[in-house]
Length: 406
Image (tube, rainbow, N blue to C red):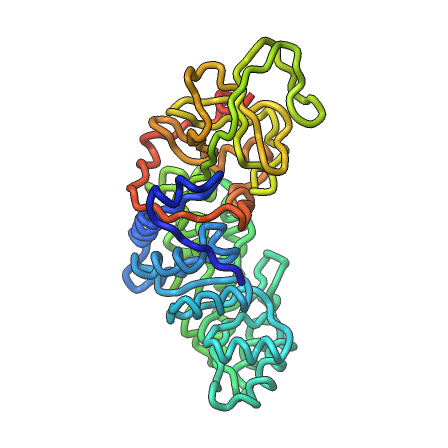
């Protein structure tokens, strides 16, 4: 798996056409904020799958652990191996499904902890572990489907499922968990139904003589919503990176975004009135204007659908993007910025002075979610770790009310 080459210092930034800045100070701050909501005995699992939502898994994982997390969650075995190779020894849960003996052997050898979603998987795990007696028993986490309708055994079959896994000689149940489908919605009815099903399933498991050592249900939204959803551990993803999982939860904690996207101006020139700009002439200059070309495009993770619908920040001011966003470049109307020169820094996501543009802003414009925006920035953008404290979430925020996009 490709890991990020984290660089420190302005000298490295000076050589880049475009880059992503990751702020470990913000991540540590967000972990401490989340821990404020938890009882001391409630564990915090930092979800660092998808390369920590594009932030870089090893750096985020280590930062989160130092700030108060005690578990890590990933989606795949290679993601877990990457963390082990970086020197991380904390327990790592594989959230995705595993179905082959080869995968089981890799999990055991790298001391990862898998999710078991079905009796069929449980048998595969136990049979594979029979050949690896030096690693047995393997700690496993049972996944129940309480309404997500994705991975997991149906909650009504939970007692038989737990009894089966307990009976297998090479497996050890270390937790039982489920996942919420609508925790980020203002209407809590479905979430409460899932919670009730989870409680019923756990009660039924206990009635057959199995005492689950650890229970977890809450994602970021549920963590911010209700302590009754915290159980023995919470699994936080988006909140870790400084974004609220839902508008109605924005004021629960002081979360600070840990990621900024920046690029450099590569050319500035004057374009006469009536001139088409970029592919398809989706923008035609209404007047003579000064235009800047910026060295970043959709191959870097700037969605092409933002064409003529986004702004950037330069010198603390908002600047309109014009013309079709291309694979490697985009264009700006910089008529209101005198003496702008090649090499100046453009902030696409992040803050500049009192202005801020967030992943939520892009997501709202594109009718998607901020998770997708964060995960979209490609590997050809170097990640550069910075340590400057980010601004408070309520000090420089700008609501999307039509003034951010046009």
